[in-house]
Length: 125
Image (cartoon, rainbow, N blue to C red):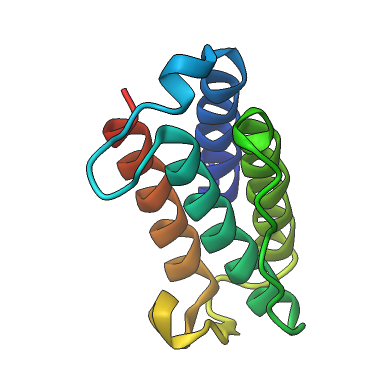
């Protein structure tokens, strides 16, 4: 199974978890974030910035659309990144913003994105 397919599956599973959370859990604090929804938004922003880097476009920040949109924002950003990476050879250079680690290969971006999704899922249990 390809890295991008693994990423899509992990993003979908986490997005579904966020979509089904009651407000009290969405707004509950987790390590490093004031709420689970904030953690999901931070991850969506990371994924979106990586996707925009892979597509060669300017980075635009994902807006905060509220706690109940977190799952959908996460799913859209994750799918955008997977599609952008699938269109590139694994050795292609992706220009990421410095806060995301700077330039990396497409394969390294896919692995980093999967690690970010996994870490957020673990933090938001």
